[in-house]
Length: 462
Image (cartoon, rainbow, N blue to C red):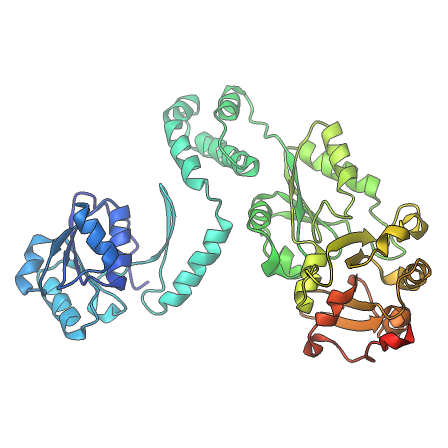
């Protein structure tokens, strides 16, 4: 470890920044967030720094740096574009045993500024010891996405309860166990509750309340997970997931969570929907935080209503966390919009996997003009869909695209006319998961994105 990490209180310290440009602005912003008194020495100031000076929020000495300036300050930052000036600031400051940082010059510094995730009073600092600041900033961006925005509020409120918790649990180990269990519930609930904390303190035995999150895992690409989904996956005790949730997505869940695959494969329904309903109710009844992870959006063709009914019937708290649905993900992966002012004034989302069979679908409304059709789970029913759409008036030359494994590394995009749809899919051995898109917007798919297969039949063949 090249640097000893330490958080310094500088609200009662005088800080000097040499330089008045954009780089100095960023450093001054962080110093002021830490309530430091800031003096700037520079022949000129950027417009935003001038505003701070005029408002009395920083002192400006309008000239070049002089070695004697160092004596008045505890912490010095050199942020000029003049290498000679930066070197002089470093030499004098280190000779006077002052803390000095020269921006982007670790060799001239005896302290460095980390990348910071600020959830005051919770602060996370990330450093590459000056070797690669870009990497530290990238890690900060990852952590920003994972850490809930309300952590600072939780920390402040918890601090107000410290003495009461200490009085209730004089033993340090007891106190730690209480805070661990309480923090899990607070994070799972999404925010602080004085009432729930008071109830927990009054209980002789701490029995945590379970709850369930119905979470959308998106269409397959782990980078398309929502921030809320990531946060729930990191907090859950149990991840109950479908078969099509990719390994890359599961890798982003809490490492010590229990993982239960309840996915159904063709011809094998080891976990019926009724059994899944019982399972998540039982897990939550044991006081566990359950992430019921579903591909796409949990409220679209994912039988969420049945799970909601079972959970609410058992008195278990449940929250829906939406995800990017397959239609949006697959269209984006194909490089097309789902609607267009000229080509498609509407969008219909439908599933070919109906409870009462495909005949229950309203094909009359599906074939309306200027509309994009997006069919979920169509693979086993492509021939029937083709026949039904044509028999209800949709042209055989209508443009179709099948997006297999949309947004994933092994994604395939196939195009065909409606009249050639089933034959094209059979020749390409299309397998689930796949999305069928029908409509004029399909013509906008770039040729480079389409896999090898015959071109769409000429419209004159209709």
